[in-house]
Amino acid sequence: MFLTKTLIRRSLSTFASSPSDSLLADKALTFLKRHPYQLHHLSANFTPEAASNLLLKSQNDQALILKFLNWANPHQFFTLRCKCITLHILTKFKLYKTAQILAEDVAAKTLDDEYASLVFKSLQETYDLCNSTSSVFDLVVKSYSRLSLIDKALSIVHLAQAHGFMPGVLSYNAGLEPNLISYNVVINGLCREGRMKEVSFVLTEMNGRGYSLDEVTYNTLIKGYCKEGNFHQALVMHAEMLRHGLSPSVITYTSLIHSMCKAGNMNRAMEFLDQMRVRGLCPNERTYTTLVDGFSQKGYMNEAYRVLREMNDNGFSPSVVTYNALINGFCMKGMMTEADQVFESMLGKNHKPDGTAYNIMIHGHCRAGDIRKAYTLYKEMVKSGFLLHTVTVIALVKALHKEGKVNELNSVIVHVLRSCELSEAEQAKVLVEINHREGNMDVVLDVLAEMAKDGFLPNGIS
Image (tube, rainbow, N blue to C red; front, side, top):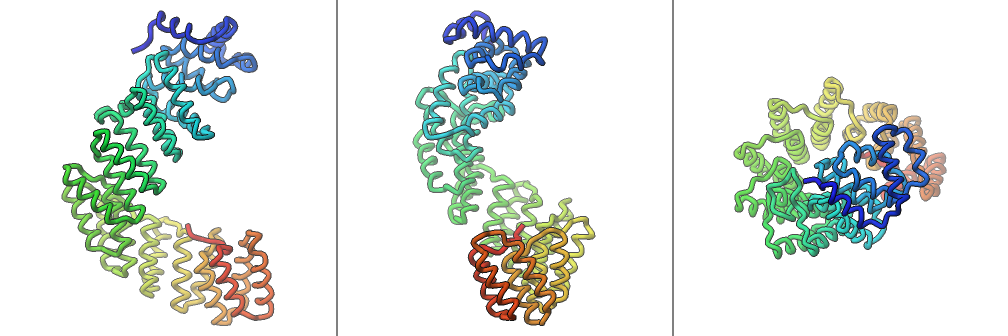
């Protein structure tokens, strides 16, 4: 519902804007409608009051509001109050994407703990002027959460509740009960930051206010607990979710499968895969890759290939991450012929090996005693612009030293030292260079190991 001209005039009367501000607003409106290229002439003298005046006068004209926003946003006169008025108008027009960008701009300028309350106060004061809806508070809560400013997001939720506003009725989630969206946004932000202890306080507050967890809440919590490594609590949430007749998503099952793979419990991982199928959910590329990696880590390469075949049969192409999992599994078992075949098959399927693939292969061939192959891969890796992982540096240097490959050893050490840009590593680099020159390779290896431990060596993990 839009404001009538009478209500707009009444709204304007509440602003302490001078006649000159009103004239500036009218002039800007004329330029916006007819001569937008002339607007820059007004920039220097345009005031926040003129901007507010213009916004309220033209709040029923979507095209005009968007034109004004595009011009005004970078300027200093476009203050917090002006932005809040614009947010009300944009949400009224259901222009949520544009409103989200502006809301995140407001949230990003959070300077201290007081700022969130200032944002809320400005939204509250301009709420009736624009005949707004509580969707605007959802938008701001979501913006703070997306920027990981969770405390500010919670502050907006609490202020909105205390003043009788009920966030949680955005159009794309209209079926949810009031406030649930806002709580879900906050919980998602906390889970993303690993602040699971604080999640429990939010859940207690939700329960106290009579809100039940929905599928979004449970899916977020399970993913959060899995990420934290709290598999027990993730399973508790999963069981509770099913007990309430709610359905886990593909992402949730993938998180549970990943947790089971990480724990080495491949039987339970496959049980979750079976549950997905029973519920009519299709595993995605990440689900299959997680299982391939899990079986490969355990050395169950036949099972890994069985999952890979199912992945292909269901129309998913293995990614570089999937290939890396297979390569790692074969290298761990010392099956370097098979690892080489997978590595070569990546090239045949237009997948360029990444730094992780090269590191795994080099380390694997060093461990298998094939120094020539390891060094060849090292040269390819350097040419491709990847860095050695610290563990690979030590393995390659040790292997080359053991085989008496002096030139190759020199090349690796020089390249590694050139890649160390940290000033704190200078002393260690000098020790390596001196002892290397003197042929004291045991000392060189000890210093390199210490450099790796202290984080001074370049880390080539992709």
